[in-house]
Image 1 (cartoon, rainbow, N blue to C red):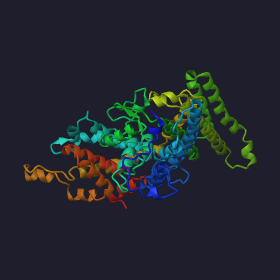
Image 2: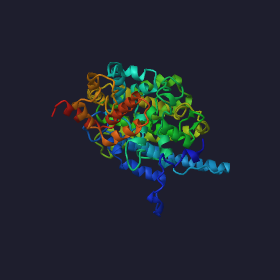
Image 3: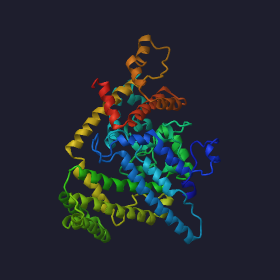
Length: 499
């Protein structure tokens, strides 16, 4: 792979009449992307989407928006270091390595990395996929069930049953927000390719594969043409084989760093664990992982965890500043220290694996093998220990299941026969069954106009009624996954007559 193509500023649609060509202080293409992102409704909706705590009323708990801002900041920092690395490499080798915009691409990708997530966090993804697995065998379209029509082995069926926020992000950005074209936000190829964490289809997805690019799917079949166009342009797809974009590894590391530190801080502030409990957990986990660690990893992990214990035992600085909550002061200062270390290790991992990343042969995370590979694993594990099993989290997730399942029940049934061309040979009674009811039509009118227009564009080339049905089901997924937590809850209440 080559940085000149990896940082492609081309778009799916290049406007030949762009007014920017006449403006002397013309922005870079990636700066235009940044403006489009932060001005979009989809980005604003992240303010009311769950990061970890669904439907939380606290003003300090992170939402998808604040999480995305933190990821963008870390990603940009990693991008700056990468630009410097490539400039030094270029000077050493006496060659020109194209580096323009790496930090800007990563900043934009950080803002976008969760934009396709449905309401109620990652649990919402599970609810949508499980709903299709459970209900497709029982919903009839004509004389066949959805399972029979779409076939369990077909990629379209697997798309629905393995709903994925990453694939939805790619779909949203390339199709759903209509600006002045039919390519969504129409962002640069470099930014779009960087957010594709898993460049594979639902049929290739394999959680057990050693290569992380196969752990989830990265696009729906309805969006394969755009996926191919972008990955071929950037050079990540060659002869049918698709590699991860090298910058995707830095984006993923930035996401992990934010998740392992910031979300843990939120849990601590909510009183889900004490500092003593957390230190005990760190020591317990250190013993568990020690047999796997290299000597240098043991040394650095022990030092990192020991720093928190020292801050806890010797709160002199906090006392001097008359800090009311000494433990919180210690925790927040330590997490800031941890972020710096993790960011350094992510860059070191990128630098150490540079040749494999550029060849598309790297299969693991870039934090693997670094000083703090296990420190990161242990902090991510703390979320499972202290936060996710909490009764308040479990209750909210169960409520989210009820809300999303209800909305899918209503809207999927309503959309089944929308714009369906019924064969004239069918008896009148059967024809009547194959059209939306008056109630269905009212539900359909609640769908956003731009989503419906996108469906009409997609289905125009459909070769069968079954294929059109697949696009209608994607339309419902677009609608529901685009909701904020509050809107999903409010619509559920309104449709149930709860005011």
